[in-house]
Each structure stands twice: as structure tokens, then as C-alpha cells.
Image (tube, rainbow, N blue to C red; front, side, top):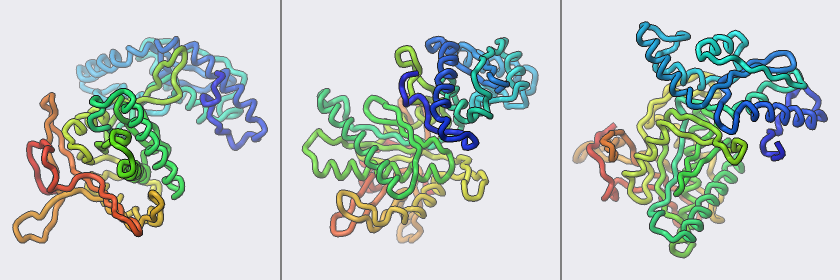
Amino acid sequence: MADDLRIPRVFNPNVREDASDQHRDWLDVLDQELHTLWGLGRNLILVWAAKARGMQVLVIPHYKISEFDSQFREEAEAAGSSALGLQPVNFMEEVIANAKQVTPGGLEHLAQMTGYEPKEIELPFVPGTDLALELIETVVQWYSISYVEDRAVALFDIVGFSLYSPLEQVTQLNSLSYSVNSAYSKMLSRNLDISFARTTTGDGYYIWNRDRSVQANVNLYHFMHLVLADNAIARAKSSPNTTPLLWACFHMGGHYEFFQSEGLSPTIYSYIVGDVTIELARMIDRAVPGQILVGDFDAPMPDRETRRVQRINTVEFIERTQGTLSKFEGLELSGESVEDIKCYLTGAQKGDGDDDYAVKRYAITDKHGRSRDVYNAKVNIYRTGTEPIFLGVQTTDLDGFKYDSEEFV
């Protein structure tokens, strides 16, 4: 493909760096071969397997994913056991949740199950020897679909967006986009790399971190409050209707990730859809202007330091986030140095005269009658020589926040 953005500049360390032009030529050949099989978006690559100077790929029509999922669930439930040793309700999700590269035997087994013959692709290089398998996997993913069971996602939404004129809408979206870019720059200045991706909701953005570790999830929460801080500073300095008032939500859950067709090729930007985006959208519907809501989750998170996976719930997660805020001391926001940051879930005393302060969890019901639990979050940023920045809404100011019940956690 002609667009340089389509070819990642990552190279196999076992191959000399001066071979990079050759790598790009090989990736271009691979991209063209997969593009032909993709059929303008009609098909997707389910899995692939390496072979000498080539690869096998299992190509199926995209609409077959849901058909196979229903079929395998019914067959597994009728037999009283699950195909491939997986839970019946998760079979197709398990296939697309794992790496696209499989063994030749695994590919053949999936070909038999789906009834589609593998396609042979002859290539001018040996996968894994001449070109890193990670690079091949990246190109294959442009023509595939992935499922992630637990990923943290933040949603920023502009309050009253539909009520503004088209020019004001453009101005506000540009302002939000600048705040996102500014926050990313500040994260990098603190050596907190965040491989974030975003997709528009029309009046805001879903933003997620491609890394799924607990550290990456914490960094995404930090990223969210830096976006909100930049937005708050801009609102204080701008004229009316130029800088948006935001709602924000943070949650963890499952989603599908894919690359939509753009013209005759897949886009270079991925899109997500699934439980986590649905939950975030329903949460934002119940939020009051300026509020930060955090979903109720208990999710497995890999720890890069211990190399173990542990389940972390919402309250524990925010406590971890607060414990890492010292990384932002000295950071400049609008020319003023940050002295301290506090991020917490709001609550109240459990009883009259009781010193025991506890977090509150709220049950909310959406327009479809479905209920979910959420927490109200606050972030306070204290800077040298100027007024602090208060993000979110305090418990005492939640008039208009519609919830069914509340309980102490």
C-alpha cells in the first residue's frame, strides 16, 4: 500500500537494520495478498499459520462469525460438552480473542469445524526467519476481528452537544481533541507511555490503552483526569461555547475490535464495540454535567512487575491509582506546578457522629430497564500559587443524578 502509516516501523532484531527497505517491500506484498482475500470487507482472516516461504490463512465471510457462534453453542450444549474444551457460550470469542497465528494443526482443525478450506499464500520471504512473526500478525489484524474480555475504556462526552450550532460543535470537538493530545504529551513527559487508541462517538471519544496490564489501566485513569484538567483550564480561559463541558466515564469489560472499510481498504484506526462501550453509554445517559462515573468491575489484570494475574475491583483499583499519583508532582498545568493530586470515590459517614467514612455505590437503571452499579468519582489537583482544579461532582452536589438505590461499600 502507498500509505506509510500502513507499515509499522518495527523490525526483527535478528535481521540487520539496513534491510528495513526490504522488510517494507515484503510487508507490502503480504498486505496486497491479504487485501485480495479480504474482498473489500466481505471476508475476514480468522487465523493463519506459517509455512516455508508462505502462509496458510483461514478466510471466512464476516457474517459467518455470529452464525458459527450460535451453531457451536447449540451443538456443544446439546452434547453436554464444549468444543475444543471451551465453554459453549465462549467458543467463537475464544477463537478470535487469541492470537491470529496458530499451528498448522490448529488451523486445519478450525477449517474442518467451519467447513472452509485454508488458502495458500506464496511469499518472497520465510515468516519468522526473514520477517518477524509479530509484524505479520499486525498486518493480519487489519483484516481480522479481535475480542478482548477485560479492557479499561474511558468515555468523554460533550454535554448538550446537539444544542450547539455546527460551527460550535466543530470548535468543541477540536478543543476536546487538543486536550487529549495535550494529556498524552504530559504522560510522555513523565515516562508514562500509554499506547492509546480512540474512536469517535460523534459527540466525544472512547479511549483505551492497547496494553491490558494493571499498570496500563492505572495510566489510562491518570490520562483521563489529565484530559479533564486540561479541559477545565481551557474552559476557565475561553469564551462561551468554544470549550466543552464534559461528562466522563471509566469502566472495564469485553469488546470486539475491528478495522472498518474506508474506500477500498481497511482503515489504519481500529474501532471497538461490545459490552464495555454499551455500559459506558448507558452510564453517561444518567450522569449530571461535569460528573465522573466509574463502573463496578472485578476484573483480572496482569501485573508486569509480579508477572501474575490478579482480580482487582473498582475500589481497590482507585486505591492503586491514588498510590501512583506522586509521579505527577511537579508537572506543569497552565504554567503552574502540581503539588498534589487526590483521586477518590465519593461517599459519606455511615451514621450520625460516626467517623467511619465509606464509599457509596449507586444502582442506576437505563431506558431499557437494565440496571448497573456505578461510583461517583472526584479528582482534586492542587497547584503552586493558584486555585486548585476540582474535577467531578461532590456527593452534596448530585442533584439531578438519577439512581434507584445507594449502599455503602
